[in-house]
Amino acid sequence: MVAYKYRIPAGIPGNTNRNEHLTAEAQIMDPNFAVTSYGLPVKIVSGQIRPVASGDAASVVYGFLIRPYPTTDGAVATPFGSGTPRTEEIANVMRRGYMTVKLNGATGATKNGQVYVRVADPTTPTPIGGLEAGADGGDCVAIVGCVFMGPADADGNTEIAFNI
Image 1 (cartoon, rainbow, N blue to C red):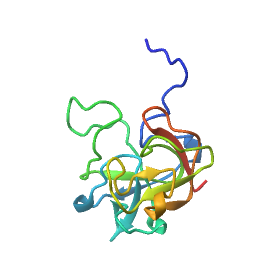
Image 2: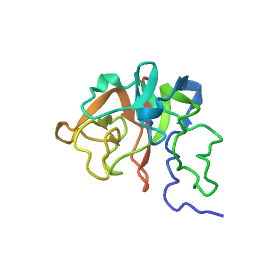
Image 3: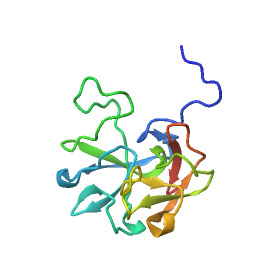
Image 4: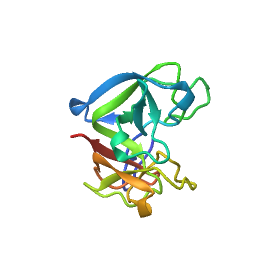
């Protein structure tokens, strides 16, 4: 039995919430440019999804990679909520809706606050394509139509609204 004293976890990155508002599409992932985690923004290049890359404009964001359920990355010991998206399967992309994502830095997200994606200066723990709560001197660009629904939990998980 688990007791949550102050706040339950915000969710698992890549899980969609409030599914009555969800618009999702099946897409093919480019195996040469694989998305490394669920809940990250993706773009479409040559008909396949790829992660946001260094120097990309915010306008390239097509949606967010959805974590399928049930899922496994093939390893028996992979903890729940982790794992790597499989490139040999069809991937689902959230084009509109609510989703739990991982926030780089785990601080700064506020209700209705702008969501940014890092496109420059890939310092640890802020990799290119990761989500942040600030522009960081221009190293991050604002994702149009994407806002936080509240602060991140202790693990950096928070909910976003995209194209709502």
